[in-house]
Length: 279
Image 1 (cartoon, one colour):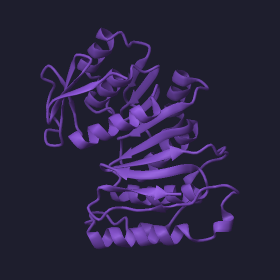
Image 2 (cartoon, rainbow, N blue to C red):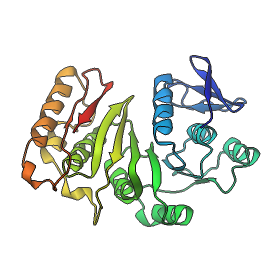
Image 3 (cartoon, rainbow, N blue to C red):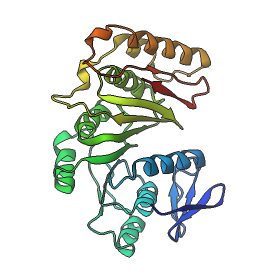
């Protein structure tokens, strides 16, 4: 991987390409550099994730203005990076970057793609990767439960063992349902661990074979009613209640888990900074 060099708290370079990061100027136009709508801490976290698995085959759902796509491409020099976005307009700066860095054929960005359209997304992934497994998937797209689940069900089984699926903005209410469904997946051995860092839910793929994988198997009405209330404020008490809910779930029916499957407890810090699932 190429080195990321910080020039100050919000600016960095990778192999000569300049970037700015932060969470204030979401619609800031390009001014000779790429803008990545993530905090400096989140950037550092993502670099560690990419380094930890030496990511070469990468999918990004939700490319926005192209800053994160350019950052990942510059960092990883990928074998293949596929980005998709629901917007129609291409990002001229990103297209120019791909051309200038001789990444054509290795980095491709598809627009007018709905992450909830299984056939459309699946066709793109099949054409790009064939039967090759994925190293990492970033989902920063709709943040809505149904389309997020659809793309997860499609792409998670395609990860290699040890590969990572990263769901951004996990505190969005709809994704709280998904978080608990994924915790049940941990109990069934589908994931080897789940961590929460910098507002991202990171699921590591186990080596369990996934046949007919669907999160409909893991639906929690009490979570939907009790935790995923639109506009709810996540107070320390609410985090504690969620922790207790997940801990209680993970202790139920241990005999139902496949032989050798890991079980763990998902812990969230009251400040929302993250936690780990311990198997």
